[in-house]
Image (cartoon, rainbow, N blue to C red; front, side, top):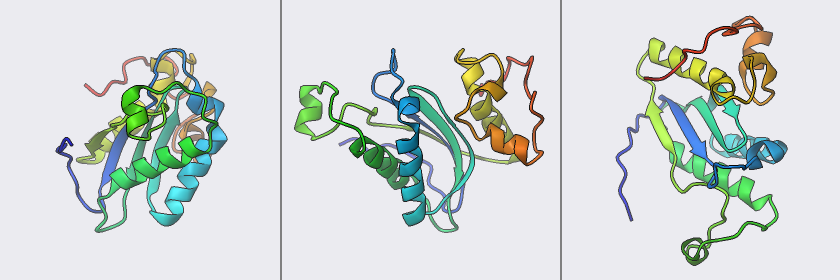
Length: 174
């Protein structure tokens, strides 16, 4: 088994990217958005975390989450969200021999990407990236038009205007 080097700091804030197995012509996450929301709710109950920003696209999602002081176990949270979501769906996907051998579903990529947020500027860039992602991928022309995003919470709380990033196409994490 691979030993991935991950930056683990208790109580830190992380940017995560979690991908569906098939990225082409796959809308599994938005088609089953309520099941995904329920999986996140269940995991948050047992393994608390703060959601600073989250966007769900048809075949991947990004989030910025903060873990409790002394807790650095974002991997368990991701694993359980994937597991609970997968168990809620009917078994209709074709499975590779490798996935059959491991008793895995064909819904998620095995790994995920994580980045430890370093400072306030890094935090702001990643939150902006999360919210702008549906526009970046061409799903909508305006951030406000994507329904599966914490952007709407930011607008409701007066943190961002409804027309935020209306003409801006340069929000990248370079």
